[in-house]
Length: 384
Image (cartoon, rainbow, N blue to C red; front, top):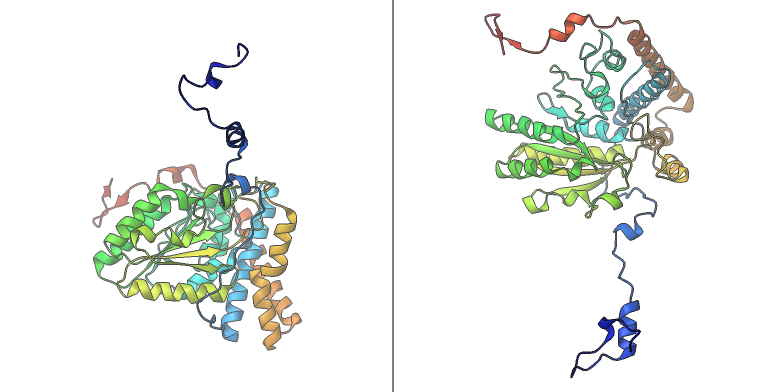
């Protein structure tokens, strides 16, 4: 007895527990949690949710338009990555390669006066909104011909003409701003919709849920587009989110949502048009979770070692948004391989023209530091 710890001694008059039970209890392993940290090392894969009904087919013209726009975004981003590697683009540079079907599909539901706002992976959104690719590329290189006069860079470009209210570098910051745009639409009594894009990482930000709450309370016309590329800044969604079905994030606010195959431009367009109609009819906000995938790292400085190369290759081979459209075009006999190669040649020439413009445009004059800070009044006086 002398060698035993006091904790093992039964109290006087107390019955000691059977030794077999005590031993079994001591060696019992904690139960594994589903979806938690214990299985977080499993490779992520993109879910492809099936729609309630058949996805409406695109017309040949719609397929061609979508293909050309997605190809323009793809070639632009490839060139931007090349220029970043050459040191012509500084700072951060987040490429949209792999996610092109999301913004191109959503844009089919956008009408004049609707607003678009997004985060820092924003080049594709600008191009899909119709902004000049020369101005986009020049802004990436910090030149005078850029859409923000060389002062914003990759993450901060705007176009009031195109109702594009910017890429934003602060994670989730655009969600509250985009909700404010929807409030303005409601206040003015128009039927415009605010499209607010953010990623799976931003979906865990507190200001997102404050925005959800206000949007539902005031029945604001806003479509929240969650671009779930599965890894946020570099952490698989299964390790970062207790609820990985992000379309359900609005349930506690009574906001409807749905998951969409974000690699199929037709599925995206179908869901976006239904969501827009919902908002325009005065029913309040709607959430679309676009299950998509980025082929490159979070930014150009990210080697993306947190996922297997085989996983990326599988996505490219089986779910690539451009290849899906290309296959439909060829199958329908709309164009042949030679005609599609001609389109690619034309797009590459436009992108090269933009790259040359970006390099030849002068750097902004230092006096630009003092512009766009205050707004002039109707009488021409400066107001703070």
